[in-house]
Length: 335
Image (tube, rainbow, N blue to C red; front, side):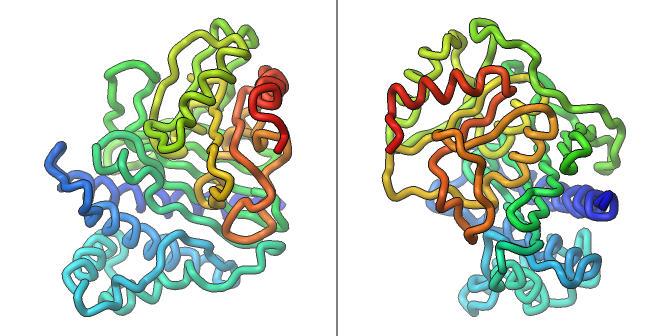
């Protein structure tokens, strides 16, 4: 099974999604959005899910989609203006989207019941809400999962700088794509979001912690930054973290800019969502890295929409992974 058709589909539909997100984000005035008003990202979320869902229905009609969004707002009379905005953005890449009702139907396919032990696609249409609204880092993440194994992943990072820690912004952005057993590649986008360049993707070959960089979330509501700092210090990493939103953190590890992405919540009730990790996991692993939970267990994608059997995330270049797990166990225990 080459999965070439699935990979090509994922790349093309995510490229279409990038166009939508650029259009929506371009209408946001930096510093002018109300933190209580998530309309721009809602428009992008719904429009992207509609386009991916309909494309999937055409190309692989028997494959279900696990999508983050539902269609309730699109169907509610009081949100008619929102529905119209979403439809207009969908029409920029899918002119056959005739009406808000049709778009709502496409979105709703992502909420249908899925047997997670079989083949399904999983989508995060706009990962990194706050980063999107700040015109900083966000990602579009699409992955194919079968019997708990991630087979294909495409991660779009339209605003990710070519090198972390610089003020440089990409003109056109990048896609990161992977097929299980086939490696990972970086696809640089050119004018019109055409693929201008392809190059192999590899994690950092460095094993000396003192020479390594790492990434973590921009914000934390439960002192997660304090916990990760203790772990990272114990490992021997001395550099300050690059704090970025979304699965762009996985891309940073996969392309060798950072050797570690550590995510752990002190909340006993928080459970990671499948769509927040699937694409990033396969891109990192196929680039030569390693991804587990904080107890060293592989992420289990067979139990539904959440990673109910896992706690936290450790994504690394592989060379420092066991050292990180030992530091976590020493500071957090195994509970």
